Amino acid sequence: MRLAATFTLSLLVLLVVGAGCVYLQLNGNITTFGADGVSDNRPAAGAGGSNVLVIGSDSRAGGNSRLGGGEGDVGRSDTAFLLHVYGDSQHAVAVSLPRDTLVDLPPCKLPGGRWTQPQRNIMFNAAFTIGQTAKGNPACTQNTVERLTGLRVDHTVVVDFEGFSRMTSAVGGVPVCLPKDIRQGDLNPNRAAPGKVIFPKGPQTVSGQRALDYVRIRHGIGDGSDMGRIKRQQAFVSSLIKKIKSQGVNPSTLLPLANAAAESMTVDPGLGTANKLISFAMSLKDIDLHNTKFVTMPWRYQGARVAIVHPDADALWAALRADRTIDGEDASGRSHHGKSGADRKSSARSASTGAPVSGSGISVVVYNGTRVAGLAASAADELKTAGFTVTGTATAPSQDHATTVIAYGPGRDSQARTLARLFPGADVQQATASGAPGISVTLGQSYANDPHAGASDASGHVPSAVSDKVRSADDNPCSNLSYG
Image 1 (cartoon, helix red, strand yellow):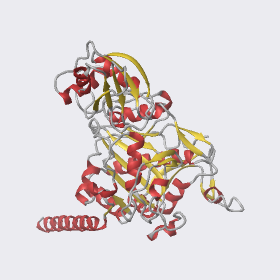
Image 2 (cartoon, rainbow, N blue to C red):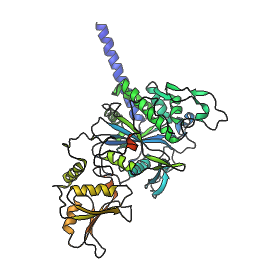
Image 3 (cartoon, helix red, strand yellow):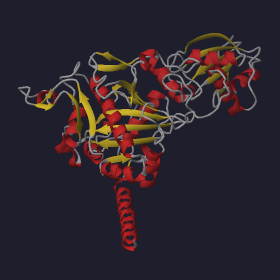
Image 4 (cartoon, rainbow, N blue to C red):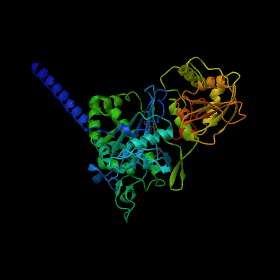
């Protein structure tokens, strides 16, 4: 009995020391990117949830060249998704951002310290290459995502091919499925012949290089597009999450997994220590598989590129800003005592500005000074709920307003100040045009980024065109694997 007790104690000591060594090693391997590249003009914090931007890099730096990284020494974004973890810690949704999507790039910081000029109608993955460095520019991608969605990105994680390969091996492989046999030519279309079968049709488990090859397959399935590949990547991440949860989400299982990726992973300073990284991973342990959702940002083809579909995408971002699930449920973890969506927005604003606002007897014209579709209508609904009379909505001559502007005519100063209580930070000014007797509000990006505003309807639902295409982490791994 004494011998057994001594053996047990020794084993425990070895386990603790071993875990401590892995922990210290993880601390030493974590690389962070500079927060000085993150824009000062950022969206406000959301209604309670948090957002994590995950970027897959195909850089050839380090050990990536032997795994089939991209050409040259410049880090490139091969895939990206925005993970929204709801305030109730019971729900999460990952929104895939197609790399060929045409977006507006905001100013981004170059390695020498200079900031670039904004660029219009540029492919999304170009943000990561700004500066032409091997490690890429995660801060620029973060700035772009925040401008695109109006969501504040709380953390950003970059994982390259080598880190991804190690992670899949650390969990003992990931179950996947394929709708048909995949040959060498499907992975490399430059081959003269189809080659031998490298993935048989049906379920199988992959790790290391084979896992990389699986998520990179583009040709030979569906329409051979990157959009189809996104569906298989979502299925893969679903299986990876399922495998991790089956092994138990605790520090002893997460440490080896994190350590496997750390040497090839770059994170923001907020995740820059083993404590922070493991603590964040542990915060996700209560989200069950069915409540872990995957969806692709609403899109359509525009020639060889991808265009964002409005207002569907605006409704999706608005729902996430309000911490509402894809099917419209409030997942903020707070009690609203049965109030309607419009009442909740009005109450939230009243709470931040003092006593409830009454717009009785005040008429307002609402202009949308942003590119967020449906914003004027959303603001008009809120104003009507507060008792204001909305005499019209329209698009402003310019859609580049950063802040909201309230303009008023002679004798309307007091009414304008009442209106301004619903728009914290608005610029209140007397109208300069002669004969402008009333009050107008021109909505700026600050309003679009407000978690209590947005283009979704009062119930918080996103269009069925979005919700009908959602994957849950517990879905059959052989279903919905391609587009076209």
